[in-house]
Amino acid sequence: MMALGRIGRAALAGLLLAIGAAGLIGCEKGAPSGGGGSGGAGGSAGNDESIKVGHYASITGSEATFGQSTDNGIKLAVEERNAAGGVKGRQIKLITYDNQGKQQETTTVVTRLVQQDKVVALLGEVASSRSMAGGPIAQKAGVPMITPSSTNPDVTAIGDMIFRVCFIDPFQGYVGAKFAKDNLGKTRAATLYNRAQAYSDGLNNNFIESFQEMGGTVVTQQAYGDGDNDFSAQLAAIKEANVEFIYVPGYYTEVVNIAKQARKLGLNIPLIGGDGWDSEELKNAGDALDGCYFSNHYAKEDTRPEVQEFIKKYTAKFDSEPDGLAALGYDAARLLFDAMDKAPSLDGQALAAQIAKTKGFAGVTGRITIDADRNANKDAVVLEITNGVPKYVATVPAPTE
Image 1 (cartoon, rainbow, N blue to C red):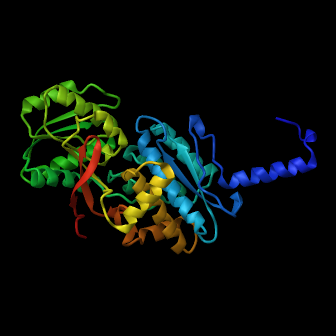
Image 2 (cartoon, helix red, strand yellow):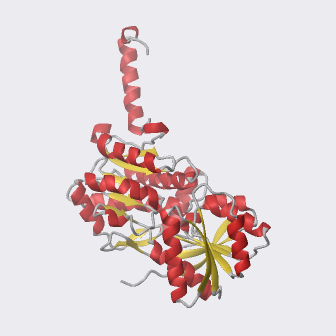
């Protein structure tokens, strides 16, 4: 580093002004163990006056598109809010840390956000397992946390500081079962799920329960573990069972390989899954996923102004169309800012109490009402894949309260 004595007074003043300006729009760097961070759009307020909001996500790792899309949606919401004057006259400073898709890294970065960065609220995670790693830290610290898309019911059961803007898996399992039975006329199913993943294991059970209640039969359940990429033995057993479709409640990283291997075995029946499929990486399956379906949080074909305006703004900023994860990140951030506006203070308890009062919030992913268990009561859509592109086919209404 250059010694200060070698910089002239005028040059030093200019340097300090440049550093100050960069600080308003710059990035939080150096998350532990290789994680990274990104700052939201700044404004006239200095860093000491800004309101810090944390986001933890899988920016890298096997499910990186989840974290990247969510972070983009949150960034867009922060940018819009700051351009409109921020919250309570102060700018929002977004601090995003990459947990690399790892449980241990999640606890590290969430602890940093809470203890070192002293954020007033947290957004995250996509994966239910990682939300269940970060949630207890937020709960203990009294920092409200809103997960955009963790659907396992156990996430919000952590405590009264933990919320979500997505539907939960008991409903999502019902959606898959109802669509298969009523829309496709299928009655014989197999399931293929990740036994090591809270999301996949829970959604598998939810689907089976709903499908059997509707009179369907689950002929066989086949399981795999984290990191597996050869599903031929499980698929061979499913083929032998003579079923009409396979329910695959996993992530896009797995379903692409499952679809390709199923077709190679001559197993040409529909695959049906959940929102964990939602990624542009589905195109890597080629035509192997044609005629397959998954439940999701929004459809780009929805003509509501909230949807079409969001798609327009997101596409202009990021040069790609938003997936459901981006929409949920955007909704989670905007709902948080709405609660911040209305809360008497940004104290954790006051802010959490205001989030809990949310009723009929007009989100991109639907009207969001937070129920007594801090979950979002909202409809689901079902999308069909053609040439790697999901298209809207049906809506399944949320259960009435």
